[in-house]
Length: 363
Image 1: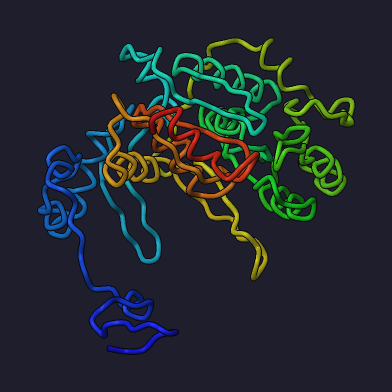
Image 2: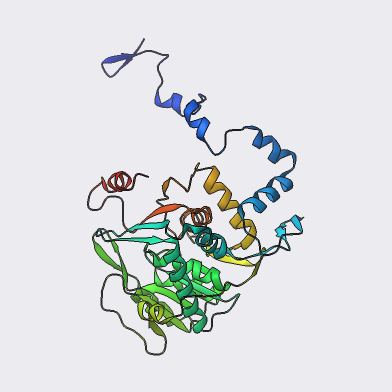
């Protein structure tokens, strides 16, 4: 026995030091294994034995292609091209095919704002909202390959904006809502963005956190931006620059409800997401269409053991980062899942906020 602050601890009992080198394994309960999406460990052997055949099978089973791909992987160090020759549109995979399959009334998003306001959006409603916004962007002159910067709080218009860009082949670049005007300037100018989508503010810790004033400051040094689309989230007074700034709600309400999706090559860029810039100048990371969608569609289903027909799913990340792109926007929607999206911080108005939402939505 070893003395420890007036007591004694057996040498065989675990200590903090023991846990730092944990070697025990904890298998899932048999009843969980029996219902899991993945229950056959041989999947690892199949993937290792022929990775190209493995991913080709996944891509053809999970993704709807307008044109099937000719080559699964074209690898010329350091460049990899996935599903070469394949044609698709991401939003057809995330929205249209679910509506066409009779799932238009399935809830896509249960959204909850920090003050407690809520919105429930079905797949049919999301498709219409995305299509209207895509038509607004086309009306601004945005074409396939143009860049659109998105600087929004965690409101439904954030994933809608990503999807609207993908609908028409524009390349979106999301900027985390906590970033400064200088951060906006760096990213907008590097991407040579034509349009910025923002909001007056977003709620954080019970108060509006301004966004539009940051954009206004940044636009003084962003010559490529032609239009700024502004969501009225918090009802705060903001300056609307004539000829440049457009009210989101009015523009979307006036737009056509159908938008023909742009056919994209598997290797066309889907989005640019910049590194944080903490240690060096932010670097734009390009994610292409077919390979990215295949990966997030598969991992959402298998890694999270998601069953879209019965589960309510919540990823508590921010869409300003890659986890939010992948597991709030593209992966779950490709799977036809029902999700929670939350605007605020987990401790407002109290530390039980997340647990209350989990209980309420049974996720």
